[in-house]
Length: 300
Ligand code: RIB
Image (cartoon, rainbow, N blue to C red):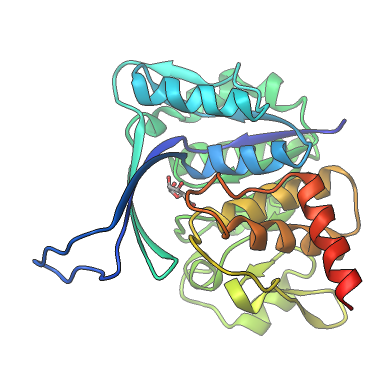
């Protein structure tokens, strides 16, 4: 099986569900609280592994209870954890998440994720080179991302960057990435304010895939701007939908499927993922994606 390496964050998600989102200075009563495994790297690795990918995660946890919990969850989902470093100078990353009307607001305190730095990635380069596809997200230091993207490009690796949370990207990073997966808001930021959607899509044909939630995924095929529709679901919690898309897309790319099929497959996986609470709970298996496809085609 073609290997996937995921480089990114591991967080413990502290999730409060509320009917009313508090205004500044206001206190409201919530109706549910949960502690879930999360972090964009950990979520994306889990999404790809659940679908059947051979996945290794590269990142950092603290030497603490939350770190152990995250490592256990990853192992249960068959994500390779042998490259994850445990360090004692900072605690495991943490995300405070508010869910209101199935939408989320998130504050991330990176903690140990800030140790996923250039030095760590330099030490892991041989292990990273075992993968054919490398998926990277941005809750880790930016200089580490710049270093690893340039390094992996020298070896002709397929590099998929999910620029979340977004910062302006250098031309060099954009050039070296095989695929860029921002949402609409992130797309504006990564191109540093000089952004017009159609122009950016045409400049980055078959590379820039803009995810638009219920509106689907838009990209330029080289001939036309195309939108792959999202599937219709009953949303419960959108946390991790973008991560499921990125993980599922990476899995499909590792299977060397045509680009449009990869996007369609990832759109289905991401859609199914929002029907349960928590970033990882709703991530589908390949059988669940298949079952959805059979159900839809028998309804037609
Ligand atoms: O993308 C969702 C994730 O963002 C959450 O799991 C949270 O940990 C933050 O990293």
